[in-house]
Image 1 (cartoon, rainbow, N blue to C red):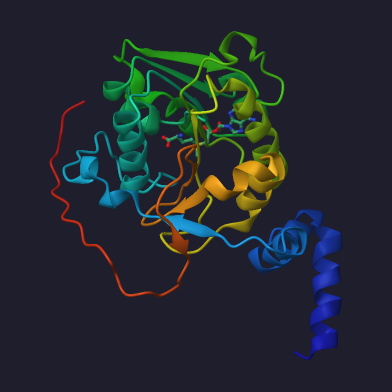
Image 2 (tube, rainbow, N blue to C red; image 1 turned 90 degrees about the vertical axis):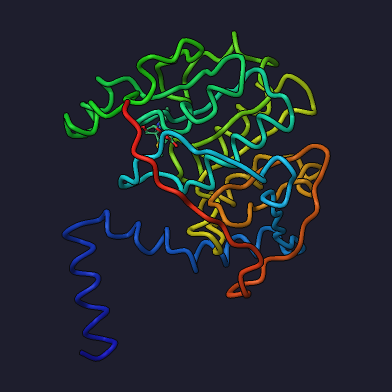
Length: 267
Ligand SMILES: C[S@@+](CC[C@H](N)C(=O)[O-])C[C@H]1O[C@@H](n2cnc3c(N)ncnc32)[C@H](O)[C@@H]1O
């Protein structure tokens, strides 16, 4: 098929299913171009938290190896941050099965986790099975409080200036990440509070510009220098005290190796 025929076919398909346009608008190369145009002098930097002394021995539990989950190293990062910075109040946007909240709960005083209400998920056309999987890992955890609402309209007043660490893992569209990041700035207990975003990378190495655009648009420029992609994980983190960092080098030789033992635990 030549280029002209492809164009005619593509336009026909888009007219039939306009949602296909999102595949172009959300294409990572398109978003990378937009990012580089908007932040021409910005060099993405990466930090390796797995070199910290607290990272010598980590146990990630629970971990279900199910679809859509984080990497084990993302939960390890949250645990490391909570331990190293003595986090008391942890708040996250996006609960789902409760895997991230359950992983940090043993290391903090209180966990707040916000999700869309089940009824909203139903109205969005989500399956009963998906909805039922929400909060699965949090059933018996006394220090976890469930908040229900849309992060865009939720009344955040009681949580303002209360949180030591805020984990943003809800809607990953650029607009939603920008909005949730602005919200998170107001939830910080102090300027020493930490912010973490999930899915700021597509995999252990590649940045994800859809999410990065939202983060950098929301953060004041003065904070940009302390924002890091996390090596070996999918997260980005804002560390107020700064951290050792380097520019991203794709397809670099592994600098670190891990050993993973699998233990089947009862719930
Ligand atoms: C990727 S999952 C969260 C995974 C969880 N943090 C973990 O690591 O175990 C994203 C969740 O965010 C919720 N969500 C999406 N948009 C939201 C919004 N606008 N407000 C609140 N929750 C939202 C979805 O219902 C979904 O359960």
